Length: 86
Image (cartoon, rainbow, N blue to C red; front, side):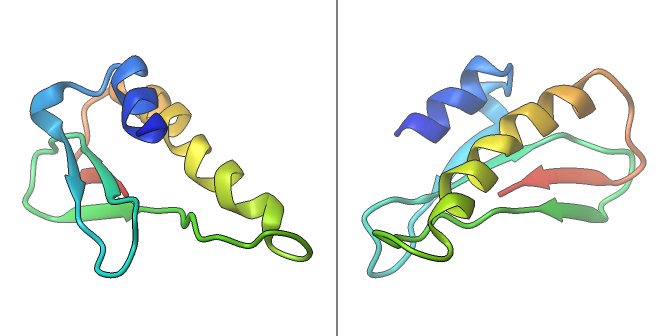
């Protein structure tokens, strides 16, 4: 899947990168975790549904494709909580 590769290309280690099956959907969720100091998790997500035209078409891939860039901006620093991009 393109989004999984984009996270890998952004530097998300394979040990922190996974896919989650979504019932009745062809594409899985992609999850990248940055370990933090506590067990508390901050979840950042975007959706990718199918809208062929009209309102909502632009937000699908644009939101999902932004997350690897967010990962890159957070990857170089320590975190108190565990950020997870989903």
